[in-house]
Image 1: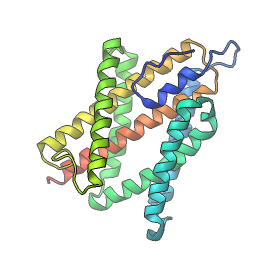
Image 2: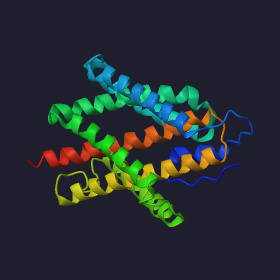
Image 3: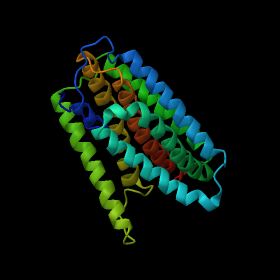
Image 4: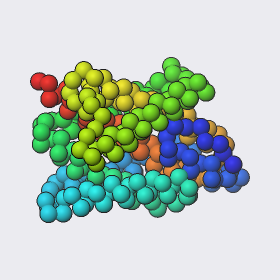
Amino acid sequence: MIQNESSNIAMSGFKHVHHSNSSNKMTLSGTLNKTLILTLLVFIGGFLSWSGKISMEYYMPVFITTLIVSLVIVFTLMFKPLLANILAPIYAVVEGIFLGMISLFFETMYPGIVTQAILLTLTIALVMNLLYRNKIIKVTQKFKAVIFGATLGIFGVYMISMIMSFFGSGIPLIHESGPIGIGFSLFVVVIASLNLLMDFHFIDKQVEQNMPKKMEWYGGFMLIVTLVWIYIEVLKLLSKLRSRE
């Protein structure tokens, strides 16, 4: 069995999978292909909601449903990663619909922001891959511990903020466009981006340990989870900066 090494919550599923002794093994190229397929499905889902196919009457129910379905799939694959070849494509389409609705909201307020966010997210992914492949940033045990702790801290802040919002309150300043709010968003974008290094490293390790080929879908899935997080945080950061203009 494999031990979990990443702060990406979706990666915990690898510890439930045995090594493959056959020629049907997980590869980097196969994982990349699955990631590209899932990325395409995200864009297709996003286009469906972006193009106004969802009437305002069903907007909020669809928004809540896609959020719940996405979370259910994430937690299911944490324990049943070999179902990724079925659930990951569903997740990609559903998450795409969810992101399309969020993107349309931000685009209405700040025209052009979605294009900027997509380009920045793709740039971050490329830069992180170059930094990792050229060993400019090495994923050491200390690095893992720091990123894991920071990610958990961010998750805790968001959970507290969400709970407080139910009572008509919230954590002050972090959601505003002042220096603290922008600084917080920038910090989250950096941590989310560094999680990509954790993803790349963990996938490399699983390829080395001959994980079964089905896990390529799971590898692609967890990269999409991180990229979605980065995109949402970049949108938030850009919106804060644009609101100051």
